[in-house]
Length: 174
Ligand code: IMP
Ligand code: MG
Image (tube, rainbow, N blue to C red; front, side):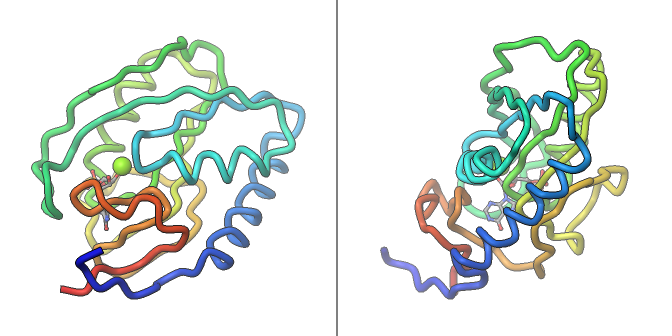
């Protein structure tokens, strides 16, 4: 641990808010089956915590995309590294992301996944940095926290692949 990390959102705050958002999804999808798509790797911690709190029939699939190189700047290029295992036809899909920043990743993904014929498709994100949005068309149905324009780590989010395992969300102090 070479970098200094300031706590932005504690583990308790994060978990409390995930429970609230899970409650909204439980109400909105009552009686339905939801198909959660976890966006690897960052979305994995959030997906697990969210899924555990859903009182619905849940199926899971995983997708890995790359929009950033090493470091903290966007390349603007989105690439599918690992595609879904299951088709989406007729499913009520929720995409689960760690953070929406420029929105490039999600704008691209929503376009690709909509073409696969889901019954519905919504977005659920742990964090949103709206100040940084380039793709204004990205509509987020469920947001746990809106945060300022700072680079954050923990709870799945990394800085050069480090710090994903921190149980809280922190800011790397430069
Ligand atoms: P977007 O395409 O610019 O919205 O970028 C989304 C992806 O960039 C996220 O899924 C993260 O992997 C990464 N990212 C954006 N901001 C941060 C941050 O503050 N910390 C860690 N990763 C970030
Ligand atoms: Mg990500």
